[in-house]
Amino acid sequence: MPIQETSLISRRTLLMLSAFGFLSTRPFMAQGNTLPGENTGVQSQGSVEEKERTKEDWFNDFFASKPSVGALHVFRFADEMYAVTKPIGWSPAKGDEEAAYKPVTVPEGFVTDFASVPRVFWQFLPRDGKYTYPAIIHDYLYWVQDRPRESADEIFRIAMKEFSLDPIVINAVYWGVRAGGGIAWKNNAAAKARGERRILKDYPDTPLIKWSSWKTKPDVFQP
Image 1 (cartoon, rainbow, N blue to C red):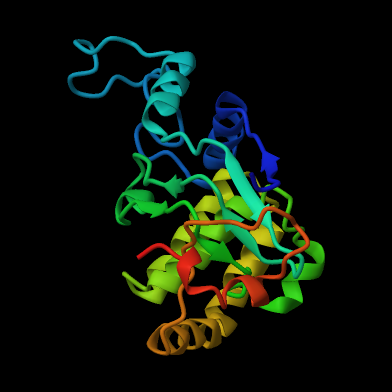
Image 2 (tube, helix red, strand yellow; image 1 turned 180 degrees about the vertical axis):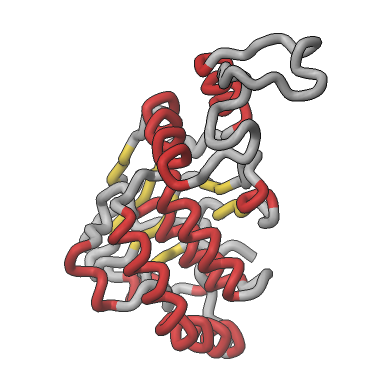
């Protein structure tokens, strides 16, 4: 059995953080800047027939609509490479901005080096922090390249907001990948063209093995 480094995130806690982050960064269009159903003293057409909704009702709807991110399980190689040992994913929420993007599923065994994020940010974005989950999603999108790079970067930005990262950090990283991520995108395309693979079916039985050695074994990869 491989040794795993596991980071478990409470779904309710995460969603509450996401909700407050969502509320602080997106204005409400219905009834000015109020929550749906909040009494403003102005009756809109048809509102008499509608059941008044409380803020708690709205939060419950938000929790029901926002997909669970689950838990992050990774194996760490000796040379600071990481393999996802259980699938993770991201799905769009109700908002117009998020709904424009397709869901993402990172399969078990995907190996990530966070190379899609410029190295300059690594020193203040720890790989074992809440930034890790969005970064792996972004790394996977940069590897499979099944959608435009702009979409991958935007999903990264949205996911960082959902994990309640500091807006200054979000903006710095987002514009960093917009400016410098093209190199990682091209390098990944070239690596795949050479036959490089990134999705494992077997893991080392010790954390002392380096990825540079493990990836030379052709029988450890998924077909």
